[in-house]
Length: 327
Image (cartoon, rainbow, N blue to C red; front, side, top):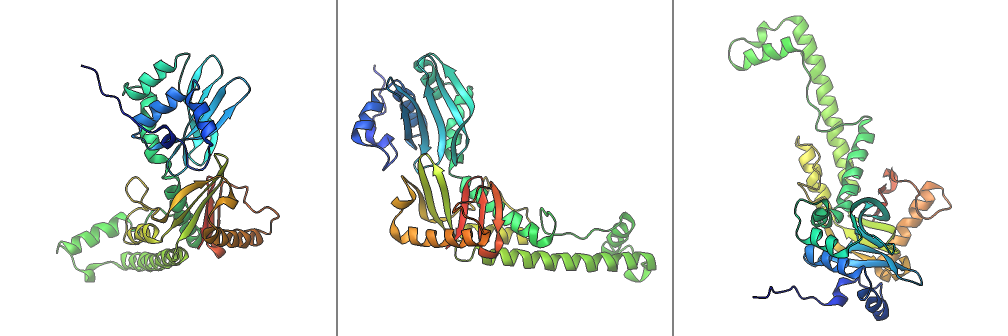
């Protein structure tokens, strides 16, 4: 009995808005196409072929992205050997570590599709993680903004710090083995001083959380310039950030994207071939926010060149090529 094969429309494998029919046909007949098709199949059709690089002899590189335009992999062929590499990060198309290389595209396809022990098989997880780059940028902004207001790095809501003798005595009070009237003067002084410091820091922490929550009140634009030859833009509501801050305020650690969706989109992220290709209704808002940021930075450059920065006064931040801009 013949095994059934997964059928798909070749045009659906390509990132929307980037390729002409001629380019798609040319790539479909190239030696890289079987590898791109294997990735597409392995990832349940959740990848797209992005920027394609060729010379007069052959297609020798292609970006593989998520449906939303975030980098997943770079596949290359130098005329002798095929490689499937991880990008440095999902918001940049520079090549990072190599998952697999071989002179045989069939060998690579087999490892991608069937060998669960091979590192290349992990590309499935990479697809899921790629879109979380915005969540990471949101978390960075929340975490660093609160740290700056607090004047020090914090990992959770402040806790009262008492010496062991005071802790032991208060434990006895709770268990009915002692009363507060028996507390020594030294212990009482320590307790009152530490409690005053604790209430001061918790009040400061709560204020910091509330200020950062206000900063996300109207949501953010998530903007990634210069990715795959174009840009990615999406609109964030405040929901994910506010829920994360509420958890933080109640005593939990600030959650990561593995356990909490910090990036709640009300306008789904999408790749565009250029900034000018962004729909005008969105682009006007983004342009205004970029000009505000440019003026705030007192810079001639429209886009920041830093990897990590927060401009709290205007509610903007940058984390690994992801710009969060006020809406």
